[in-house]
Image (cartoon, rainbow, N blue to C red; front, side, top):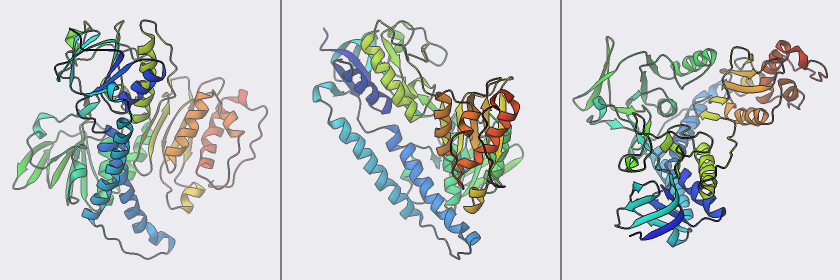
Length: 464
């Protein structure tokens, strides 16, 4: 016998789940939000916010070390325990704010429990209750993937545990050169830890452009050691961790495994839904509506392993919330321009689509860009892609100072259907980092001459 009924049940109270519940409720649904702990979002607890707090401390240390370039003499000492204490204090403030928002939800619309499917529209809860819903949204998040050789190491860290350290390690091996690995590796190196990154691939950060990849590797190699295209083998060694690889060997105090995060789908009983599952236990998900086949089930956020980013999780929650209320009708959605930022210094950013064979690409070198030189941050480059023959912007790959901000500007331009000429016709203040994009835009305009009529670009001083 069913104990609880609702229009939309949401499993998981992370960023995606909270957005889905809010969207469904605003569209008139009776909702039930189910979570085993309501501990806060991944972003606030172990993701975006604590990592940026560590990066902020690292940037302060690096800026102090670089003050000599401006004629300012200083010495730098890093108090590891103080860095981590501040991180946890502010992290906890962010988590408390998230929990306070959850606490404002009507008590009858949230229940602390684990859920598993007993049918496509039915759930059994760990409390002994059952739920029948018009539609069900899965937003259970993800957890770090730890390869078998690393699971029993005494010095093992993941992004779920690294922020609980009492002090910074003297040395750190980072396994995996993705977003998490790059951000934390560079931050730790700048805080005084000896860091080495190991990755079986030859590229870092999932970049789409070989020139950007080269700039990224060159910049990081000045601060830490890169071992790419290797197969590291770990083992405990007298209180340390020894890593052997392709004829090399080194010892580290800790090892950070950053080989990705896997969707939290175990124990959900997806086999009871009637959905066809692939070899990873995932059902087919419509990337636009987030609906699983024709079932009243939606899979969103990190749980679908498609776009594991906070703003995407929030968007997916809003899309699924509307779709769940409308089921069985399908609600058309318009996904936003893809935007991904890795908060290295300088930031690594990808926007929109990768260029196809017919696209035109313009480059802007930031090693000699005026404002970047003024700030002693002249590193990297920008690559902007446009379609031919109209010069309409389709994507960009950036590794340069200010890329996290300029990525938003370019995403907006792409979403508005602007051409390289349209963007050049807008004001670029001098001297700014944004002004450094102009050579890339001019290169596109030269390659797509149909844009030339109406040219109002007056140029910029050398090095701008």
